[in-house]
Image 1 (cartoon, rainbow, N blue to C red):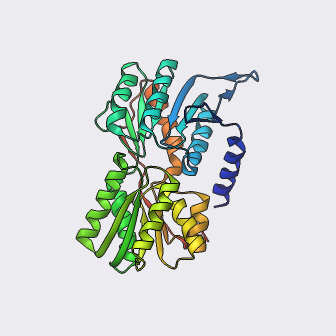
Image 2: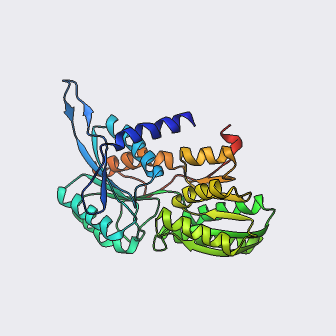
Image 3: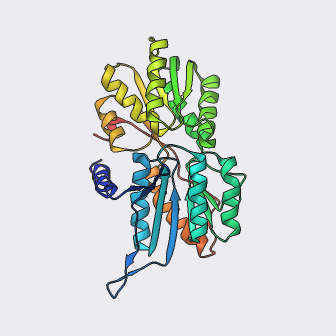
Length: 317
């Protein structure tokens, strides 16, 4: 946990150099190459990473990618819309294609809408890997991440076990159009319907906005004061639920997604009962390594499953 906290501090210092280009897109600081023997810098490859939005989990992925990029003479261009936005992701990707960079990694907000531009990049000889959420209908080179249907089932298994397989829950999810979010919700509801007597009172989607997530959760709490647990199926729901639990002092279970120092602290403090991780902390390294293979015309696995883990407070203390 100390290492995770220190990484976040480092990224916070780096974030001082971020710039907003006035279009709602944010360019994030990234590796600029590696020292060469003569003391200068060499840049053998340039890769782009496009997130759905800015968020601490993505910042950790960038740090991991930077470490691997620096060791392999790779420069990174890291970009994201301020809030989840398909059109901005398309514009960012089109810009990277025009620059003729060597590889692109993207977590697509809308897989169907991004498929033509992913195919355009591949046709231009630029390998594309998706992560977190796939675009299976595209010609992308690889998908990096966990099986989102099984991630949803794991969230359901966790809340079911903690509630003794019965009770009433409210659910907050992310972008309704994002394939990974749809798959998580499907897996979640499928498990509960088949394996438990838990009632799902309401499901809301926050569209990648923490403000919307907080509003959704507060609305559901007011409508269902006797709920037993809140389950968040996306990263944004985690921070929103922690803030609400702090403000209201709720003595109810909350289960969320994603590894951050804030989530770790919330686990230790009892604000979260469990966190479901897709082992996001290795995505950055895996993205760079996979793009290196593909850009050098070497075979890369088309599916790189990073697995699923349940984190609890006793694992951090």
